[in-house]
Length: 606
Image 1: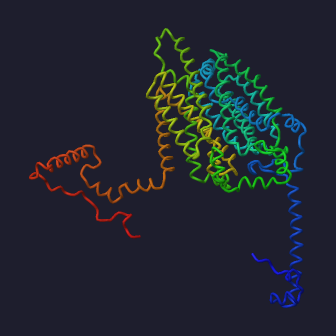
Image 2: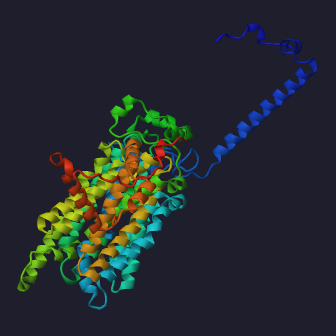
């Protein structure tokens, strides 16, 4: 582009009037306006800078990797700086390990552990509450889930009022106290209150507050780190602690000292988390996300917080070379908020799938011991102890298979580019598992069913974070995820109650399991149609009969009756025989079917 002439660098008032055709009297007015505008711009710039320095409220969802503590907002802790400086590895790995340890702490409130002691608890409480049944105790546990599920959405507000260290420490201590109180429960009301307290402070506060820290230490590798954390958490929470509880909980009141021991023993990991958890993220401690160099982290933390947040939210799609380097596809970059996601069909289609899979698996794990009475080896009546021991070993083996399958299948989201296909995979796995359980009631069928259900559970855990970022971007993915978890928690409690109700009314679990399998298969069909290519849907629509053709077919006698259809098939077969080449004289003039004169819709000129 041609450069302006040097003679235009400085022009007098007369020169301006000659150059631009402006009268000499108007030049002074323009110069005065320009001077006033410049002063206003400088004043506004100064006011904006002062306002930025005085900001005291920072949302925890201001962007992936954004600094939590702007300069001057909160003093940095010397203890945290010493911990991070003395750590031989990137401190983000320590935070990831603490998240996995949190899954171990909240395990006594989950179905994996409650299902271990459920029968012993029911037999013990029946001594003082004769009318307490499996349906009643399932109703109490489901009610605790329904009451506590909205609290999962409130942990971000709690983090705005108190520090993360304080919230995690208080939640962990209260959870340990709830385990001690559960060992002293004597009636339905106390059981409901204690289970509700466990759900409030455990899955409702402790674990979400810890899991949120991954957002501020990892960015590029956060999917892989989350998969590792969830796999290790499944190993600790679904396998290790329930096995310990299974070996310590025996007949009668032995479950009470087992929970007392848990309440005391879990103080060690709670205090360890309280000691090692730090406020803020990598940028707040002059570190780079994903363990980048400290110089880059210091540069970003020294005043480019908002630039980092905006870059994380508004970057364009990466190039093909970057897509080849990373195993997962780039997530969407739109700024979808929670409210916008809740009004979109994609959220509810994925959420119904997520809730259905978790509801079936949680109900199966919760009632697995009682469910085995429908599939035992028909021991004689004089071998009740042998039958009980056999069912105990089989229930333990089923839980081990579910946990191992879940741990192996959790990283599945890293190897699938189109995350929405995981929805169909999870539904097919869980429907196959529950149908195998119903129609192949043997030990091998139980093992196959456990592997399939554990795989479905792991797949849903793997995409619980990735699918929301994939569909709605990273701007508000965490709040969308925890809203999904709250809904899933409520539906899981409802499924536990539905299985117990089916058991009491029909004496078997077959009715509820068949209903759940039908729902899963229908959802899989809906997901397949929703994800199908437009060409396939167009072909299906073109082959579908029009309303006029349906009306024409309805005029045939007996169209909607089986006998009428069989008669029409026999008549057509007879006509085919009579019209054979060897019987030309017997060929009959077949009447054409009733057809409408209205042309098809696609052939009309619009």
